[in-house]
Amino acid sequence: MLNIVLFGAPGAGKGTQAALLAEKRGLVHLSTGNLLRQEISSGTATGKIAQRLIDNGELVPDGMVIGLIREQLEKHANAGGFIFDGFPRTPEQAAALDLLMEEKGMSVSAMVALEVAVEELTDRLLKRGRESGRADDRSFDVIQTRINVYHRKTTPVIEYYRAQRKYHPVDGTGSVEDISERLYRYIIHL
Ligand code: ADP
Image (cartoon, rainbow, N blue to C red; front, side, top):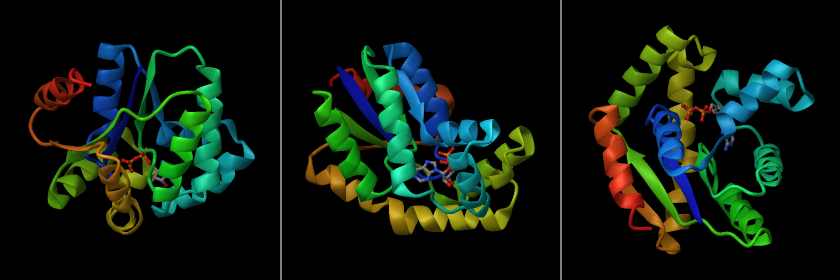
C-alpha cells in the first residue's frame, strides 16, 4: 500500500501533481484545501470558521483538518493507498496522521516535497487568482501571509519526516509533465 504526503509551499503545484499521481497509481487524493472549500460551500459550522481564516491566509485549527482526514480515511476504508495534498501542514498534524494511519494498520510511505523558488510561487498564485477566481489567490498581501505562514509553521514538517528518513525533495520547476515524471520515477521505487 502506497501512502504519499505531497508537500510544498502554496503554489508549488501540489494539487495538480497529486491529481495526476492519484490517477496513475490508483490512489485516493485527499486535499484538505478542497475538503475545507467543500465545507464552505455546504455552509457547515466548520466551513464558517474556515472561511475567515482561509481568506486571511492563516491556517485553520489542527483539530479541524485532522477531523476531516479521519472522516475520509473511514469513508475510503478499502482504498489501495492515499495521496495527501496540503496535509500535514504542522508537526502536530504530522504526528496525528501517523496515529491515524497506525490505527488502520497503515503508514506514510514517503513525504515528497516540491521545491519552487519564492518569486515563482507568488507569480503562479497571482496567475491562478486571475484564472480560477480563488479569493485567497487574488490578493498580494494574502499570498505573502500564506508564504510567511508556510515558512513559520509548515517547514518544521520537513524535519519531522527527515527524522523518519521519509523526506524526499523534488525539483518543482519546469512543465507539469516533467515534474510528474520526476515524481513518478521516485515513487516507482517505493
Ligand atoms: P495552497 O497550498 O495553494 O495554499 P490549499 O488549497 O492547500 O492551497 O489551502 C488553502 C487554504 O486552506 C490554506 O491557506 C489554509 O488556510 C487552509 N488549509 C488547507 N490545508 C490545511 C491544513 N492542513 N491545515 C491548516 N489549514 C489548511
